[in-house]
Length: 496
Image 1 (cartoon, one colour):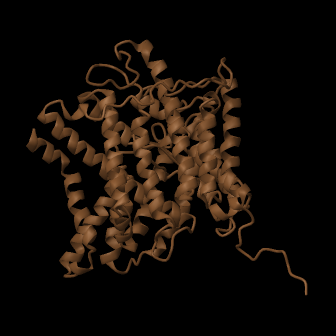
Image 2: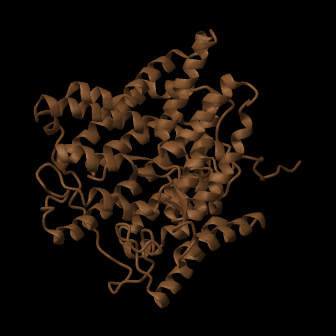
Image 3: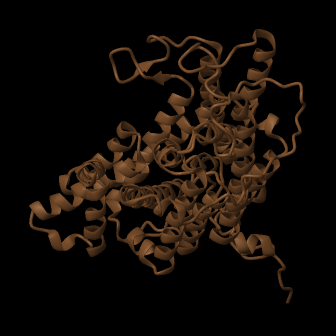
């Protein structure tokens, strides 16, 4: 009798396959590489954007994060370069750790919104090292919540309709992000939003987005593998060619609205290689922010609470949304290795503070990589390696304009919206909280606000109809936390 040497269906073909469950999740190494690269390209904007936020703001002493005086404009350029290098390094390392330990296809980098709060709210009250110390403490607290099981317990206590609402809401949110990044929607004159410039789609950068979106949809409908990556790279090449001919300027503080929104796709005279300046690493003061007087100390404690709550629930929403998009959730809506995923995300917040780049968190743009086929942590390893390579290839990474990457975000928003059918819309007890969650995220431009609003409506409705026992005990705790979160302005005014 002969014995077959063919492995059974789903059996790992190698140690790499076994660790990352590549075959088990119906993927392949090539598929993971493509997905990881797509995630990187949709996240790469943070390498340019984070320095523009925390690299240009002054602290209490009038210094930039580099320690140089903000009064001298010549100091801004070197500071931006330092922040860009540190941003790539921390994102690369933590995304690789997420891939290897969490084994989940999600990228991590400096969180937008969190970095803005750091630059424009916290830094003016303290020094930059002290501000980064607060970020470290926020990460330490979240890590403790993970190690004690509290964060995972909250994750599992969220009702299924709210989880669906979170996933769909994030889909709408990243659609708006993509449209805003490309300049398709922007603040209007007399209206909250408007189409393009004065109601029209004008300028070559917008054309890059529109053509890229059509190309992506066409490739996807034709079932072409690597559709998102092909569209991003293809439109970047077109953008570089256009820029070399037309020399289109960028947008600067509202001027030239038809220019490039962020990166200008042109090759500089310095070539494609550059050596990173990592001198920001480790510039942290853990206790200084709490020794600046009672008023500042109270303000800092409230700020840490706000950062913690935002980071806590942004990650939960992102993991659920990415997992749902890739079919990586169990019957209860939880991903495999939940505790490891949450622990790595918490450590990323600490690493962001130690690296002087603000809290690092899970990126919803990872859904673009999942849409391309990423299903395992191997994709995250690829994304992380790309971030590390970008340390030396910063000029090449900056070639990708946001208009070329934004179509992937919009298309993933479409894919994530398909989950809306999992909400029982005939039952307003479940449907309305999910609806509030969905709409609050894009309209408030905050994932945390959407989750908080959904939680509070879920609790309020259950109490109103006499079903308060159906509210998980942890949701009561979280409900109180969100009441404090939404009432921060009033609380701060009373304490002032």
